Amino acid sequence: MTANVAVITFPGSLDDTDALRAIEIAGGRAVPIWHSEKSLNSVDAVVLPGGFSYGDYLRCGAISRFSPIMENLIDAAKGGLPVLGICNGFQILCESHLLPGALTRNNHLHFICRDQKLKIENNSSAWTRDFELGEEIVVPLKNGEGCFVAEEKVLDGLEAENRVIARYVDVNPNGSRRDIAGISNAAGNVVGLMPHPEHAVEALTGPTTDGLGFFTSILKSLVNNGRVSA
Amino acid sequence: VGISKIIVNVHLKPEILDPQGRALLNALNRLGLEGVVDVRQGKQFVMSFDDEINDSKLSEIKNIAESLLSNPVIEHFSTELR
Image 1: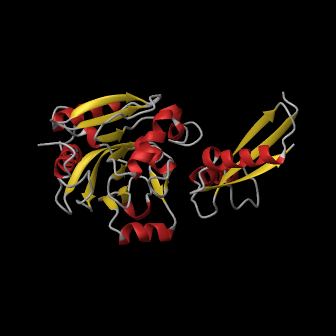
Image 2: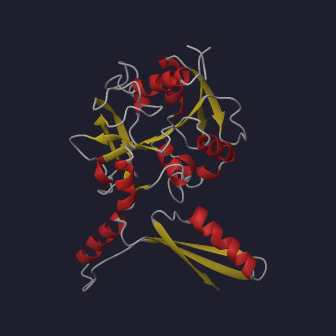
Image 3: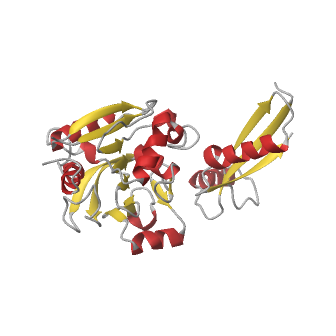
């Protein structure tokens, strides 16, 4: 039995199809869920995809955070359900206060779209255990509001608790504090990532297939903790 | 519309970089506005109600201002009754 990994689609999500595809390529069973559902049923993990949910009105992710599915998702994430938020999904996780800090307008004010080098700084989270520590990967990055900010003491805490998952290498593309590209919650089950691993899972369309590691990581994590059998 | 109004102003905390405000500052300098040294851009929400806004309604509004209209991680809000 393989793992069921859900992808939540909000009005304005646009990377949900790629996320579903990445899960299948990694060997999981991808389960699409519409945001107005109230229950995640019995999925084993959840991806909040990138895009422009609710047109980024008010603040990115601010309205999606109150979608009906989020009540169940927030409780489940606090209970240990693995959740990966990519780009807009990361913004939703911050707005939900499942992750600290906030994502603000890129410091240079331009939307950016490039193949971005990252360094994996923590390979013990549910979503990164298939990487080598310190491994450098290249995946697409595309955001207008990707500048990660938090109070200095919050940043110090993230570093001290080894909760910085990935950092930008060579170029800091958006002004994120301490070159942070992704972080996790204290338990390591909730991860937010600004770049897009789901766009780097096939040689035909991605700059690399490095992104696949996030999706194979979660499948391995679920087998290791007994949620699903290998 | 409505018989009472409340205005919620939301602005970035002082320590948060406001790149839009900075771009506006550059434009103001180009336009020749003398003496301007800083610009911060915020948001204003005007809500109309069908009745007077009493204390309990005001506290509900403040809860919404803190949970939805602003993000307390990066923003402050203030309210003005009209």
